Image (cartoon, rainbow, N blue to C red):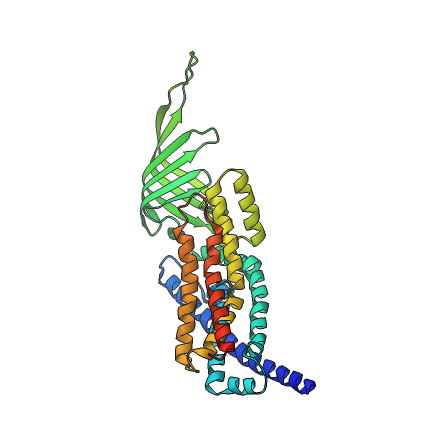
Length: 378
């Protein structure tokens, strides 16, 4: 009798896992491709991009790896709602319960799958997705026409150069203003009515030609007294002035810290530690928040399985359209709540990282409550 029960459990575990895995894979593929196509359509509308077809395929590959952070957990929720809704509608759950299996035992294999996927998601969130995001960013930038960098009305930082362009007409610049900061702290302001950007990326360079340039150079004349000498402005001019940048410097033109999405979990913790030592509590808190957000995202497959399995068996009785709609609504609420918390507290002097766990705890509580109701047959 014991062997018969064990055999029955193995059969129903394989049966349910096969159904859940099939729907999960199909949903993940559809979600990832849909999000990737939407993003690439936006890129295609940008006239500053000239992306060949093979480059588009590479962009989709890198972008889809990064999108798995969202598509896999959503697919877990969709699969749980659809599969267990269908099992409930076909009275298969009732038959398994009549054979002596409790609902919690029926749900166990799917919850174990959610736990296994959470470990996979930790590796994905911590290492694979950051590397993919960095590769995607570099590849997308390599496809840019440099006009996308020198956009009118925006100041960009390239090493010790701050560049501002009033207008950009196909590489012909107007009202160019450049501020150069010397290692000694002196500034030189360069103003030119117009200039031209020359793309020499095949040589690893970008050339900027300025016409009728005027230079306003800060100088400190000698002083015989002990008082600090006053700063004087020396004005010079040149009919043609050339500045040559390294292309890699243009690519890292923000001059700031690496995008948090491109850092591994170890790098996030290391960056947080350094910033704490430097006394920058707000920025250190932002990196701590990102680390905790990665942990929450990693646990999301298990959390969504905990909610989706009993909800699918309890609510919609196998209505596929309704199940998918509920899944999308719950996932959107979960992620928007996390992202809303992150956006709402960025102005705080120290980011309270614990708040990012709030949606996770709410969904776990909801899942446990639903499990108890379904297990009692309510």
